[in-house]
Image 1 (cartoon, helix red, strand yellow):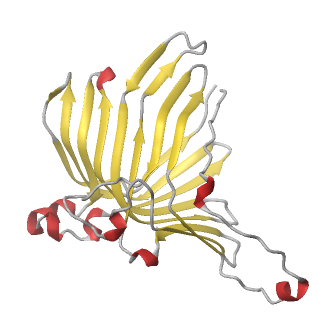
Image 2 (cartoon, helix red, strand yellow):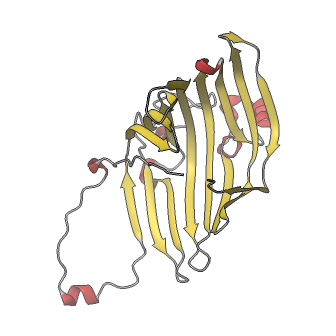
Image 3 (spheres, helix red, strand yellow):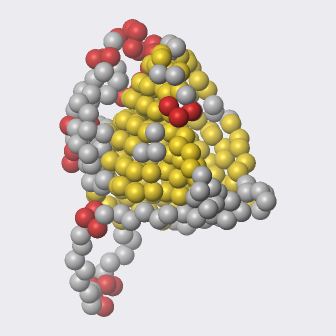
Length: 271
């Protein structure tokens, strides 16, 4: 199996630094530093990601940044959720612990008053193409996603090289236009397992962050057999506002208390 991964370049405007050399006397006085902190307001765009096996899978016009919305889950969540098209208010840290573990984390910059960060992810067409590019088929016209996040952290274990990822996020709106396949889904919501109960008891204006932020925990373990994926925590409420077949709505779907915790998967290549 052959693979082709199109690399993405981060905007040089994310960080600007002036580096000055340190003499030995000043350098000797710098010890036990607390890691690296990066404050950024990124917006990432990619023209195309192309996966090559014998043919190609192409994802076009990818954009990741702020969602540029006034409300999420029917509520205004304050200053941190009004970032426009950029991921404003993101603070990232990089630390190496005493046991050698590498920890990467991202959370809301306290200078933004804490709270949440809004994010948006969108794509253009997702398509298949033959090896000689003579045949081309569009699967999905577009994907648009908007949500809120409060935390992301990842740890790489120095002894086992296992990767542990924890995040807290909620999807306030997801639309997938798969008209070439004959269907579309719109107004998808994914939140914590308390979302429906709180929405019914208190209404959208009284929702708390704990209701809309879904804790997700994953452990990745690489071996000669492949990549093992263990989903530790995923306990969610989900709603699909509209399902369309042949451009006609056939109704909606509500899933209460969806628990995928304990799910194990193995990913590996094949000949």
